[in-house]
Amino acid sequence: MQWLKLLIYFISILILNTNAEFERDPNGYIAYCPCMGRFGNQADHFLGSLAFAQALNRTLILPPWVEYRKGEMRSRQVPFDTYFEVEPLQEFHRVILMSDFMEHLADEVWPANERIAFCYMERKSLQQEKNNPDEPNCHAKDGNPFGPFWDTYSIDFVGSEFYGPLHFDVRHSSIATKWQENYKADKWPVLAFTGAPASFPVQLENRELQRYLVWSPKYREAAREFIRTVLPRGAFIGLHLRNGIDWVRACEHIKDSQQLFASPQCLGYKNERGELYQELCMPTKESIIRQLKRTIKNVRQSQPKNEVKSVFVASDSNHMIAELTNALSRMDISVHKLPEDDPYLDLAILGQSNHFIGNCISSYSAFVKRERDTHGFPSYFWSFPKEKERQQSKPHEEL
Image 1: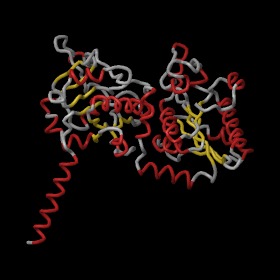
Image 2 (image 1 turned 120 degrees about the vertical axis):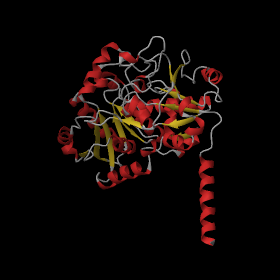
Image 3 (image 1 turned 90 degrees about the horizontal axis):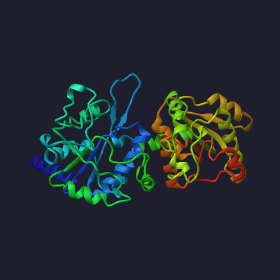
Image 4 (image 1 turned 135 degrees about the vertical axis):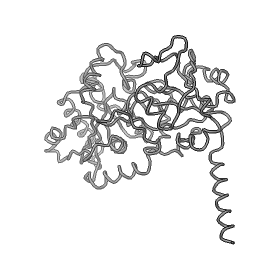
């Protein structure tokens, strides 16, 4: 019988520890669907959402990352901690995985009959028969990825709440106080937004929160293993090339815009470092090779003891392996990419490169740039500054 008593004792300790780990936050929670764009956009929104949750003093429910796979009609929801650790985020503010919240707290904190969707104003359904002018609705689960996202956790909404004219800019206003006054935690324990409570691109003040996004052990080790076993010993330059057909179409908006996507990362948030131009979005193959060679030459001159031995390329379409290999053949520099596409492992490797050249407009490049900034690693952008401006300034001024 002694073993049975011991077993009961250890089970009771385990239950107590589990309950303590998932105690209810009396200040409430924030949930949202990262429903705009792919990873780069979602990462920008995440940093803003983290800042928003901290300003409102509510626990942020960490959403899964929304992914789109070729040939699949519905999006996939990948748990947040697949790619990033949870613990470092808690150094900045309280967070909880969505799966943990739904399993351990939702029944008590957010009963099924009290789940309200938050949106700025009425969101029309794609199915006209659902639209009722007398009963405006957020239609939080209408379309993809909205429906699949909430369905992953069996979440349905019984009503809608329109929070306009409130906004999410907690850095430049006293709006956080108004949110707290309008939506007290005892009546509104969970603010569940149909989209991220953040602006895009990420606000300048929130860029530094990147330091709390730490790769999971799986991706840290995979990046180190690739660098150690595949790349030749010595320094390497990481390249990000955006050249898929969707990007070609996106670049068509350059002529009508002051800023596009993540362009403030090089042009400045008020265009204080220049205006948009076509080559910034879609550099030619010739200019890519020319700039890469110039970067290698500059590194050899400034760091002769850490010579560049290889180049690693991440791309959404054409990695230009043959072109780059041919261009660098006389310099004894090899060119590499992953054997199978893995955009997250690409990111982890690019973050560890000795030097990085990315696309100013791309939020994917922006993620790498922010991560490297936290470590003090040098980063540059394709075709920035312009050729003529570059010749008049010192070579490779880091941003």
